Every structure is written in C-alpha cells, then in structure tokens.
Amino acid sequence: MRRGISERSRGEADMERSSKIVLIGSGAVGSTFAYTLLIKGLVHELVIIDQNTAKAEGDVLDLNHGLMLAHPMKIKVGDYADCSGADIIVITAGAAQRPGESRTDLLHRNVRVLDSIIRQITRYEQNAVLLIGTNPVDILTQVALRLSGFPKERVIGSGTLLDSSRFRYLIAEKLGVDPRSVHGLIIGEHGDSEVPVWSTLSIGGFHPLRAPAGSRWHLSEEEKEEIYRETRDAAYKIIEKKGATYYAIALSLARICEAILKDQRSILPVSTYLENYRGIEGVCLGVPCIVGKKGVEDIVPLALSPEEERRLQESARKLKSLFEEIMGPFPPTANPAPV
Image (tube, rainbow, N blue to C red; front, side, top):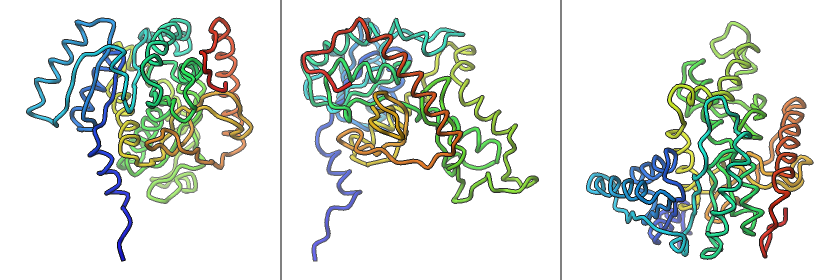
C-alpha cells in the first residue's frame, strides 16, 4: 500500500518550489533578519526595499559576499514592483524606539510610515502573507489589515513570540535547564500589558507551580513576579544599553517565515485578528496560532486562570481603544478588511 506524503516530505517539497521574501526596511532589525535568512537558507530569493537605497545596496553587497560560505540565494535591492509574486512580505520599516519611550509612544509616527508602505504593496501583490515586525506590532498589524484589504489569516504580527522566548529563557536560567525544555507562553500585547500564562507552564511535562517549597523546581511568587517584570521590560533594558533590539526579533521573524514557507503548521504566539476569542472582538493580539503556508490557519484554545483571563481582557481593551483612536483619519481601502 502506497504511503501518503509525510509531513517531512511535504515540507521538503514546498521548499523545492521557488520561494521569495520581500523585506521592507533594512535597518537594524531588517538587516539582521536578512542575515538570519541567509544563515538558515530559508528562501531562494530575497528582495530588500528601503528608502535609503545606499543602505540597502550596502547590505545586499555584504550579504552576497558571503554566499560562498552560506546557502545559495538570490539577494537584490528592489522596489515595490518586486512585491509581485512574493510568498511573504516582511515589514520592519519604521521609526526606532527611543530610550525611555514606550511602544505605544511610537504609534502616531509609525502608522504614517505603514500607511505609505501598504498602499505601495497592494498595487503589485494581493496574495502574499504580510508579516509585521514594526512596533507597536499589534496595533500596526491591525492597521495593515485595515489598509491592505487582505484576509485576516494573511496579515500576521510577530506578536508575543519574542516575549515567550524571553520568558522561557528567564525561567530556564532560574531553574538551571535548557530553554528548549521549557514550555510557557506570554500572550496579549507585545508590550506593557502582556500576560504571562503561568497556569500552563511545564518543563518536560512537569508543572513547576505544583512543586513544593524548597524543591529546585519551585518558583515563589516573588520569583514569578521578577521573571515577568524582566520579560516585560527586556526591550527597555536592551535599548538603554545598546540603542536597539534586533538579534532575537530577527530570529523570531525568521521562525515565522520558516513555518509559512515549509507549511509546518507550527503553534506560535503571533499577533492575529480575533473574532469572539474568549469574548474578545475586533483587535489583534498575540495568541498561540497554527501557522502554515496560508498564514494563521487556526487559533489554539487556552485554559486560562481567572486572573490570566482578566489581564488578557484588559490588554485587549487597551489595544482596541488605541486602534480606534489612531485610525480615525485613515479611510479604508477600496477593498477593506472586515475590521
């Protein structure tokens, strides 16, 4: 009896098809993301677009000079016409977060930037997945959804994937284990109202919150609060010390691209538009989603504690209010998304 195509062979077959990513924004995050794609060999063609053409040309030269030492790729500087035929369009362009500035303080500056970008993209491409990496990412994901008219499953923000990675790292450091063995989530806003889901935390199938006091696995309330605070404030700390965050967010964006290009159907906490999710309507938030070649294929239900539920609802209300405030001056596109 002939066997069906396995998940592994299906992913390999998808990669055999020529794949194309267009990157818009070649700043610290964008150029690091491009380098990550090259090292991982995730895509056949990468096009970089930036209003600073000289910077984009310099990055392309630098990346191409390493092709002999990495994976075969076609890397070039392009313009918005090159968005045609892209599998994924990654947007990292925008004003950088300043020391002491909250992500929501960036909102008015970056919405204007995104508006201009989306209007250019939609002239040439209607079928790609839009992946937003610019902060404040949840609001800008919803802005991109509204302005592009793309279906909601094909407009994704990096969400709380990076926050969850930070969360798992800090827990692993506290308990002395490999971060890859920690299974824990941050959901909600990628920002100050993000929510740690302690109730589902597990390490190798074991739930540390059930560990008795004095055990190496026990996390006290004080330790949990410290881990959450360090997770939430990590970007501020990094920005204060070196001006920007880019390594880990570049890896996060590459991980999402990998799930899409290889149709992995990986469960990742990305920002997506929610409709009747635990009573939340009309807002983009980071929640665990099945991510594959179509973008967000489904949202994973979570069993939250009453406190986690309350905090998620608060995060949703905050972001929805901000979105409604900022989008007043922006008319929808000719084919608007249902938001």
